[in-house]
Length: 326
Image (cartoon, rainbow, N blue to C red):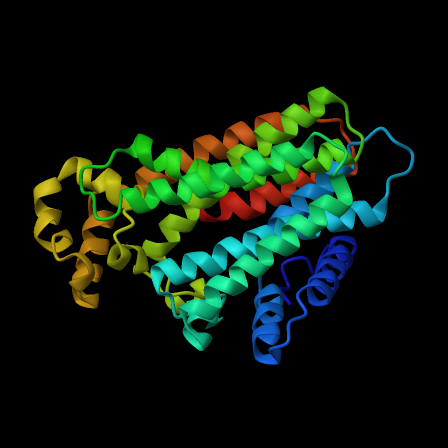
């Protein structure tokens, strides 16, 4: 289990409940696969989406809320996230996730596909049990479509050296930011907040998600594998050209072309050369500046929320999560 919430025992207790519910809901006949799913849920993930859900639920006006309903919704968010990670690892042929061997690496792509699909069905079960009579069934369906469209858009742009920063932002808004938006909006809505706060929560979640993905892409160029808990510079091999590279390509497209033209055959030494060029051409710093803009937008909106403990915690979490890499 991640120590990320060690200084917030109340949130840690909620995350422990989510882990227990995941363990209960993913029972399958193959013990090895069941163990792999549970390991993924407990292997150092920060549970950020459920955390934002719970923090925004504190802004509700109702005197009492259905804690079982909140737990199921929070768990559905993490389950959906886990399912997308498993499918991402299949597409990228990733050997590691959160410092552990991926399901596709352990059991093969066929089993990994069905494992991801199984998690999608658990996600559907949880939202049916917790929100079937609310507008958020439709919101969840639309969000899932946006996530998948973001992933498909990213795949469409693989190895495209002429893709734009706008297209990159469009992709990450779907594949990452929309789930943060959903988590934040659902927290406020099911916590009983008024419409203004629900809308504000969605905007905050979206901007945090955008900054978070940009910073994650920066880490692919600046972190080592031991601290990142997954292979670094992997995106170059799979043809996913993220923001730092796109900024650098704007300055010297011809210097990158001989290396990027190698496609999946690019070697580790060549990837490291690309990485150094990205750093030298200011791709990292330009990406940090854009991440800072999204972070500042989120912080401005958080400061508009009612001055309760959860607001302070949101400010601290956003600052810790995003600014530490900026």
